Length: 112
Image (tube, rainbow, N blue to C red; front, side):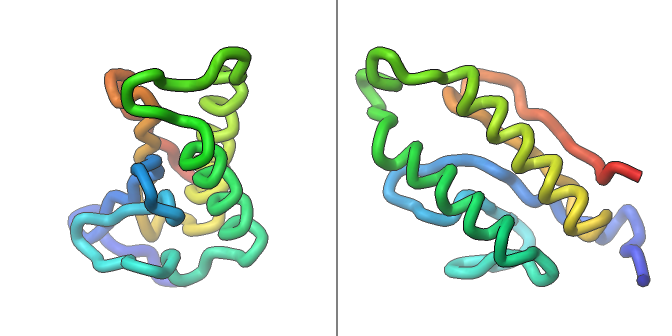
């Protein structure tokens, strides 16, 4: 498999956005309505399910509802970011931007 040179590797962001079902974003590549090529159907479903939890629960003013396990949701996001890195194997640099956005982004590399 050909791995792109470091200059051509785009950043793929994993982040939630209001009313947006797909939580993957790339500034250099239009991924509107689709996931990056090479992503398994299983991971696509997990990403959509994770984003739906955000859409159904997070409020800009009130944040997460009482009793919502924010730590678990944050950890699920980290697991998904690592799965993206592993499946895309260097095609993108994975950047997880957790909610709230005041938290620092986390970058993930594929496990070897």
